[in-house]
Length: 134
Image (cartoon, rainbow, N blue to C red; front, side, top):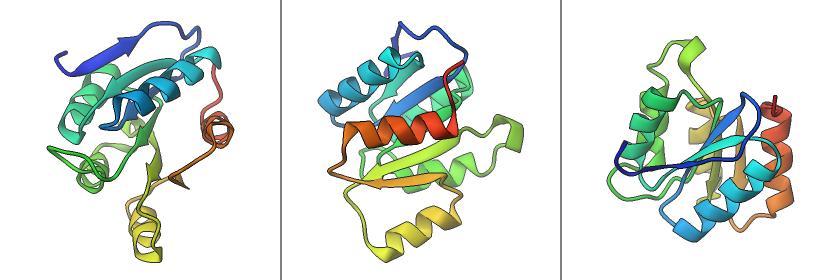
């Protein structure tokens, strides 16, 4: 699929879609999640992320809010339309940390909200708690 990168290392069935328009950040998250045993995919914008969800059916999405083409809020709204069995778990990682942003994330069904800047170990711990690698 154009715009989605498959990062091939994970051994298990659990997969993570990393969605962020900062390539270095996406790479660091993907690489470290692979080391933990996850299959990973990367998308740089919301529209590509939704295509990747349909194609790859990830277990979990790590999603930035502020992105080009389609922001993270719009992605979350679209994901709500999926049947429960097809909806991936969602972890928002964002520089937007106001109470209103956190409330909006909760209303949209986000499973975890991690403010930027973040500690990599925290992200991995949250992902492992929500979707342990198989």
